Length: 116
Image (cartoon, rainbow, N blue to C red; front, side, top):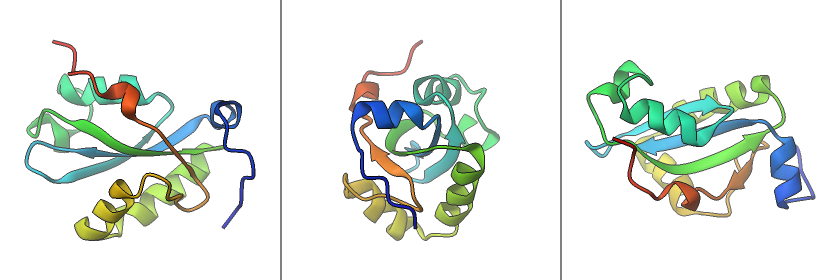
């Protein structure tokens, strides 16, 4: 597991890929990767994100981790998707917990309701 000593906004900005967990209306989690969290959640809520989320709106971003490359984010996505719902919930509730070399980032800026 890689260690990233800097955890400021500059470090997060240099890491252009994100692994995210979204909570769906049926209390399930959707896990994916993106370069733009706000845009991706908006896509899910408009029904053009993923087939899984199109019938489970609204989708709310509940956790995200930043990575330096697409391949790192994809690797972490595979690992996250292998976890049980309970284990994912533990990662969601632990706001400081990193995952597979990814730095946990705040998602409070997306607390606003989805665009209509």
